[in-house]
View 1 (cartoon, rainbow, N blue to C red):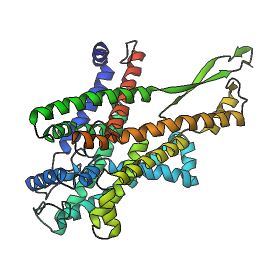
View 2 (tube, rainbow, N blue to C red; view 1 turned 30 degrees about the vertical axis):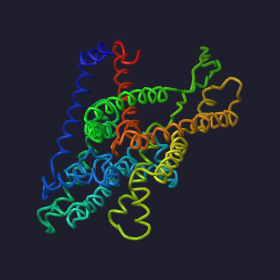
View 3 (spheres, rainbow, N blue to C red; view 1 turned 180 degrees about the horizontal axis):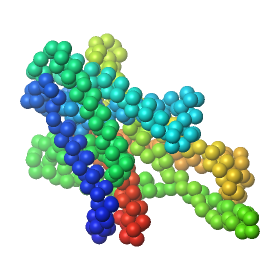
View 4 (cartoon, rainbow, N blue to C red; view 1 turned 120 degrees about the vertical axis):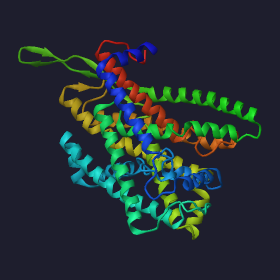
Length: 437
């Protein structure tokens, strides 16, 4: 693997892409530390430290999940990728409901560009709404309920507008960074950004596990044990992510002019976890909404129930809702990304068939049956992995930001595997050995 890594840097084009991606990541982390104008940096830093270590740590870790710590410090990149993720979810849901969007999706590249443009505009709208919400919470002193410090210098209209515009512009820059990485770098841009924001919290999370023990020596031992167990879990996640069911496809021979073509055999690879990390991200985003509701309306029976059962990030109700949402979104996402009817029609058009299965409707039913059988263990696997942080909190006295489990582990492994595969494919094009031997 070391030699393959060196080969990647010896290839000029690939070296430029890797260095370009790393440069964008550095700029992203730099922007996550620059406070928004009118924000008292020292005061908000102290309030954020108190909030993440107190009884309300679950609430703040939920709203801070995809910002890498930038949200609680109201930096220029405070909103992170959440507006883009939310707009992507909304557009994918509307694609199933609105015929016009479904038609655009089937038009290929031009239609996808139009949907991408809609996603950008919706991202800006959501960014304005979220920036306004968090700015007003900060101005009114409701962003940190346990902190009485003044985290903004002025409550005037102009400073507030500047804060809103700055955070909205930060979201636009993050969206632009993601598209730059996709076009000129390595990997999917938004996935790499999410990976970066989650990985940025990793050292502090591990150190929190160590400090959570009364004895420093015992805390160090527990931290090393957590790392060892986490690496084993990560190896298991990699194994499941690579697992797939290969459905054989045979193509009949046919005459084209004076030539006999066809007769080849191939297969359709169906992964056990066909949906990847998308269901976990979707479920986390949905649970992010009631947490925001409690921040705006902290009184009433509904807000009290949400604060007690959902906003903590732990507990029976939270884990049950999270598990059910993951299973639902796993089936939902697979159903809109894998179309057995379209695949069956394409196979029939080019003379392909599955051995023992008739072309047409029987092939469609067979693919749907296999896909549903594969999605069941894949969805359960995602749900079980998502419960690891709750177990870690009970066993190791970890905090809400426990890195080896749930959303963080799945995203880091999934994005890491996709990025390595892209590098490997480019190495193979140049007759080098890849990362995965």
